[in-house]
Image 1: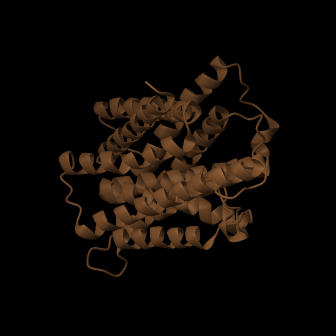
Image 2: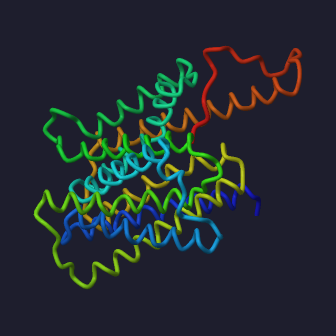
Amino acid sequence: MTENFRGILLMVGAMAAFAIEDMFIKWMGATVPPGQILMMLGLGGAVGFALIARIRGETLISRVFFSRAVVIRNIGELTGTFGFITAIVLTPLSSASAILQAMPLAVTLGAALFFREPVGWRRWSAIGAGFLGVLMVIRPGGAGFEPASLFALLGVAGLATRDLATRAVPHSTSSVVLSAWGFSMLIPTGGALLLLTGGATMPPAGVFGLLAGAVVLGIAGYYAITQAMRMGEVAVITPFRYTRIVFALIIGVTVFGERPDGWTLGGAALIIASGLYTLWREARLGRRRAALAAGPVSPGQVPPLRAEDSASRIP
């Protein structure tokens, strides 16, 4: 079994874990308000990642927590998680998951706008096509428009902000510690939301089992995706992130009785195709850069990069 194949299996396993976690969250939303779900997930995730950090000998108390990059990252984390969880609870799982697939495109857009990273016209076209796919799923002004689906867009914006801010965090701070900090911020956010929406409820006993399952699956998915990205070639493994929408569609149809229409399926396909194109384009540009770094280009070799073709790394 090659390293790439192992990495693909881990990536697909991580996406399955995240999709099942979303299913548990949607089940919890039937009896528990979103603010309370945020608090419970925040507490469970913070404790879980804090334990992992302690086992690895990493410190959780650091002045880096108050740095600008970490503060922006935490704001993005709580905004994105609030938006996506609310969308999962209030809208079909399949449509919320389809919109979430636009996050890599949003990261590319943010990198171009705020980090001045060069993006050629081809990738701008892919970003535009991807967000056209989002409009197909949401259909603002149409008969099938659900205002609550805008929470999924808020989730995309928040999580993209989180990923962009992470680039500015010192490398000495591990992703495990950053995750513990991010989840801890969900606790006061959920509490504030509860104050605005009428307070907490006493959840049925089964909700705690769903909560435990969601936390365990979230942490397991995080571990699997981290190992997958370290194991094989990023350009080969990263496209399998989009298997999450496949699992979400299966769960939505078989568990929740959802029936995605042609617009939703077409929009999801366009979002995925745009994301895959940007990944392919980045891999191609990466090979060109490697060829240029290796020495002068001779006839028959890869042609040199043009300024318009330069591209930033896709997370």
